[in-house]
Image (cartoon, rainbow over all chains, first blue to last red):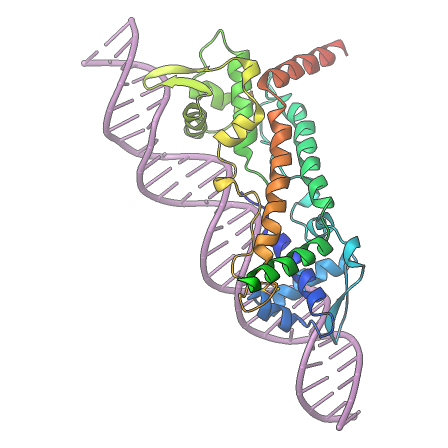
Length: 147
Length: 147
DNA sequence: TATGGTTGTAATTAAAATGGTTACAGGTAA
DNA sequence: TTACCTGTAACCATTTTAATTACAACCATA
Ligand code: FES
Ligand code: FES
């Protein structure tokens, strides 16, 4: 399996809010851009809000970034949108037979390794900020314009 | 989402074959141990076979390791059992709006980052072999016996 | 205060992935 | 021949996921 697209959409949303910082980023506006349903956007924005990455208020249109661009890492988003619950990226086979030497120990044997692997992944995400993404998009757009 | 339990079961199977190397590791035997269905085991063993990690032959009972214990890494298993197809651990939001500055660039902006993250995860897995797991289980079992 | 527009959220539906199961063809060995 | 095994395809049940609908709560303003 693969990691929920909520993560990509989350990054997406934050980046869009930045580019549209002079305007009003309502759920409808964002939805049109992301090409999906406003309610879905509100759901994800709600998660970002709970993680204190954006500010939104009931009844008032528009979401704003709650932190500086350079202070929001992809790991923040990753955790905010709950791609993995209970921090368990890997599924461990649950019902192994306790009668069996391997069965009763395999879980404890691989768990720390998987945790380490997961941590390595998260560390990479923590090294990239939304600012990097924004800058990257600006660069890409310029390159396209030159052609 | 989280990574298929096939990965854990794969490690499971290889480890069990090692511990049972004097005996015959038929799909039924393994299934009883892993606590699941023989057909499911055959399916996963088939994947391990395709990756040249085990040797099995139609009609002949039992699977054997095709390589030395220390030459089988968890990454080998990870790839063998196809936890991620097309090497895409992350889902990128597909339908973003090309009319939008962010939409038409976001994908290319985050893809390399995600690839890097994925690579970091895989690197950890490549540093652990089945031999490590086997040894770990022996140690754990001894510790339990001491109590 | 009435109105129009917005967020927040619960409930529902639809689609996809996963794990598990059954069934059987084809192979091996005694 | 017989008994047993692997390899697969087909199928089903369950769970997840995304998407959608619907509506209550809220705010700003005329
Ligand atoms: S229960 Fe997994 S090998 Fe015994
Ligand atoms: S922000 Fe994703 S399509 Fe514009």
